[in-house]
Length: 312
Image 1 (cartoon, rainbow, N blue to C red):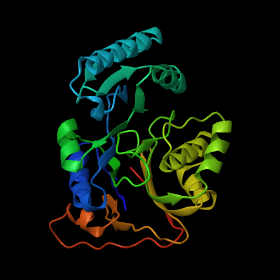
Image 2 (spheres, rainbow, N blue to C red):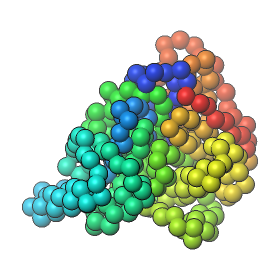
Image 3 (cartoon, rainbow, N blue to C red):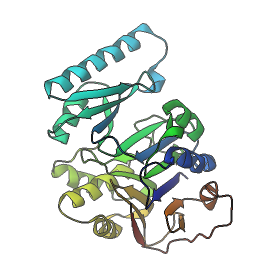
């Protein structure tokens, strides 16, 4: 019973505090998933790329000397490999000892960069994008937002997820959202269960795609990215996904300048939408959307099999 949210300001100049807005929405859905919280937020990175990665799980920090020394060693390897690829590091931030944010300039292959870094044991790329920054960790939205400074994040749109662990571990790797590795600026959050996950995953792997987890939600991200990389528009790829995916699902996908929503033909997983002139807000429950307003609003439930896409 996870919770998902989405938000897009259609006419924004990128100065909306979407970090704080999404935190209020996600916190209202804490009861749907208290184990971890994730954000995929989109803003202006001054024309540079942002690399978000982790070098360990938070639970690994048990105070022992060995893990702290190993984390330092992994960071040295990351920077050595970035230098080897000719990547210019513009700035560095470390919200935690294990999670890092590098603003970079790089004109080479995104896949080569991601694969080269993830070849280092313990290193996992969360996202690389010109607009996207993907942040996820254990705890509710208030905890994660405070830890990563998200209440001051200005941008145009984003999607988020609150997770209740059922079939996998409580760790960052299993948390949502998922970046569509190695495609720039595509992310997905999902509520539901896909019954043809392994069959479709193997088919995408045979085309050269790679998966970072065993979570079925990642399949949606990779599928959408694969279709768009082949020339499909986001809405077309999402409409085709209704037939491609088996199971019960509602998902949100974000790109550099779009936000999309899709529901399966049984419409078993909830979604509520507020559609205003300037802003669109979506959530698993209406209570999350209402945190953004101090006046009465009208919302609606999308019908079964529906796909909607909004443009920034």
